[in-house]
Amino acid sequence: MDSQHAGIPLVPERSRDISAGSPRLQEVQRQLQSLAHGRCLDMVSRVFHGMPGRKARVSSGLTGSSSDLSPARARLVLHFGSYNYSGLNGHPRVLAAAGAALKRFGTTTSGVRLLNGTCELHVELERSLADFLGVEDCITYSSGYMANVSVLSTVCCEGDAVLSDVLNHRSLADGLRLSGARLLPFQHRDSRSLEAALAELPRSQRKFIVTDGIFSMDGDIADLPDLVRLARAYNAYIVLDDAHATAALGPLGRGTPAHFGLEDEVDLLTGSLSKGLPGIGGFAAGPKATIDLLRFGSCGYIFSASLPPPVIAGLIEALRILREEPERQERLHHNERFLRAGIQGLGLDCMDSASPIIPIRMPSIPTTVEMARLLQDEGIYINPVGYPAVSRNKPRLRLNVSANLEQEDLERCLEALEHCGRRLGVLSRDA
Ligand SMILES: Cc1ncc(COP(=O)(O)O)c(C=O)c1O
Image 1 (cartoon, rainbow, N blue to C red):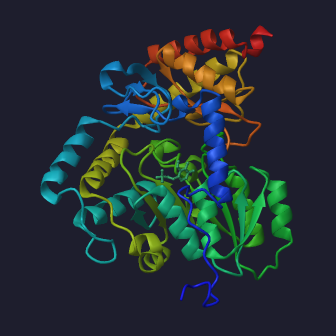
Image 2: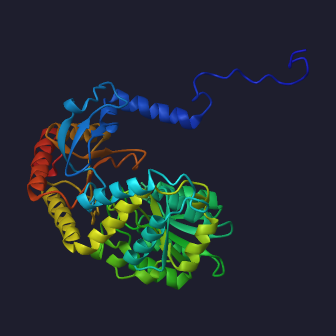
Image 3: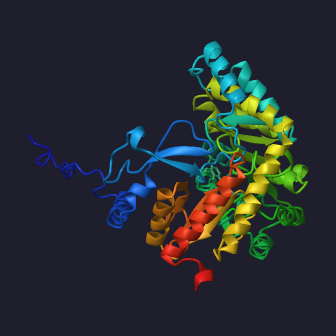
């Protein structure tokens, strides 16, 4: 007897196309088609060869039409798109420390942190980071994304109110969704919108103000003094994601709280180990009692493999270098200021950038991609950014400045921006 006769409804035949019936995958499909149609695909799926540093070799077209990925045919470019803010990626001391740990500990711990995945290097890294950031304790995760998801889904819960800047990183939103807390977005860096939301909430309710330190797409910095004022007035906790500010902002690169001298006012600091710091992973830092709870309660610590020892050894060495070489941060900030002033001098709009992330507003996505293509042809690599990373009406180029860029590189970048900008008619100075 077949199932229809037994009264069991037949399941519709499974399509070979996994996007069939999925609005989300169909939206991705539409985005891919529009990128391919605008000849943009090559420019958003590039392959880099060798160690990322001041210069890089880049091939276009992992997903696009031109698929010659051989290193010999790659373009040599100055790198204005890397998160290597402190310039420590590839530093000989970092490589030596990682190499020695590779021989001693191997490539992986083959375990999760809570069980057999903690070696002495994990403990040393967490102590060094806590010391560097000026907090009691620190816990590490396999990525900054994982740190945010783990921390927020553990610390916040149903019944809590979470006030979150609308431009916060996706990982914070994902963590909050898992937490079950009530999400109340506030306008970007807008204290009035935040205060209006806080004022509506009962005093007894647990409240969290959640913000990025440096905003990853706009390069502006959270107004931490004002957030602290409001947190005190309305009895709220502050959770700050310093992914782009660690080793890139504040004295020695100690981040947004140190930049404002407000280290004691942030209840939990999260961050990444793969941007200003030359590794992979993420962290949460704060009072020992809170970090202990995260060690026993947060999903990323319990259910995901621990960081590989060679990466950790490199990070520990990088923290040493940051302390020994304050001039590294000075160079980063000189580079950032020089470039921003030069770009603004060309009549381009850097929005409210005040950090090593410098966006340059472009009139449309096709112009953004064309500009990136022309720049790459002139030996300058800058990332083009559009929807969904930023809103549809704000496409941009996004520069990431590194301490290892030399003065002549900065001047070369400005010349190329002027030349390519003039060709595409995007310099308002030309208008
Ligand atoms: C603000 C912010 N937070 C968190 C993350 C995630 O960090 P990771 O790349 O270490 O996962 C990013 C990544 O770019 C980010 O921009």
